[in-house]
Length: 535
Ligand code: NA7
Image: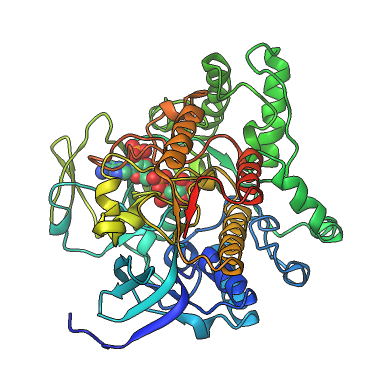
């Protein structure tokens, strides 16, 4: 593509991405007196909520908590309409924040980063867009999201399909009309769990191709309880502070019961109570579900019984019953997902038993049978956590390539910085708790740490910061040790890259919990940043 402009925009900090992380970075950097621009591939703010527009898309952490806390007036003034808000409302919120803090003037939209190169002589990063535009900063912060690179399934013939194909993570801005159509849905993760009831409500016929069954808990979503909203707003700071003391950063009641040794009536009553409440805290009464296989199996069987009770056809119910451990993957939240399989226009194909042979112009072949469809919905998730960073040609000291460095799996110091890549920070990078927590407080903690660190450097006239190899190695060893505790890392999931063909199996997020992680970051900052070399 021809270069759009030969000029280079110079700023203190270049931010990649204008999702919730990139937006808050602009707020903080400006407040610290720095010039910053965010470059953004989309033509609007919101990141994951800009791209994931499929029907039924909504957050799985209640909106009173899945929201910024840095602006107390904002959290007091804003009212969510539902317990778990839908994508349009979250995007409206992102746009509202962009307006409120006048962020758009410093965001360059439709700016997809092709390369980012560090120049040792000037200690700056030069970023080049696919269309040739360039921006240079003394620092570069990658706010590229953990789930932002769609995973296209490697299925023979998928490009031969003659009808429209939609990836849930790249959904069109205009409504997709399924009326009168025969639709194939490939994948049964959270995106399919959320979208299937909507698609099935419109389409003539839906065929779901399931590789791995998923545990899904009812969201019991509905209009936001005004009493709960008032309770939060009366003590928002307190709720936020208490949330930060929990492993996941989500405020809730947590218990310490050992499920393995509990009386069956007692633990089933506790699970039933959580099931009726709905939400991601389904397992939060127990301290052993992700440590003890027997405990896990009891909780798993509780959910399987729920599926069997809802899905009328026993054979379909059995296919929908997950066989892996519960909690190994992130739980899904649903609204009438399993009930949807009772509809006459929905059928389920078990592609673990009989894989897809190929896609043709007119449909999907499994076990020699062509399932003819008019539309393909690809709900196959993301190249998680490292995909966005490896897709950019990032070059550090001596033109070292980050993609090469991470070819056998990532490593990072605190999920924030990488040796040989000076003045480069990552928000919620591998090695931080990120996707195991409520993303908004996690993002805020990272943004504040990064901007404080840059401020610390300014005061001391430092122009260069780099994580040391030794600190990175020590932290990464710790991340891997933490992953060995319990059952979570044993599951094939995107946490370990198992969903991407050829991706090295490494547990990427930090499993040591949000409070321990925040303490470590605070200790590092408070002790003049051990593990970093300044110049
Ligand atoms: P997920 O959770 O990664 O789900 C993707 C689904 O697609 C899952 O069922 C996969 O099966 C399936 N998949 C992936 N590749 C293939 C191929 N090649 N063939 C058939 N099926 C495939 O992504 P989502 O978008 O649903 O959700 C992502 C996160 O968003 C979620 O965790 C929440 O945090 C919110 P597999 O399990 O790999 O066998």
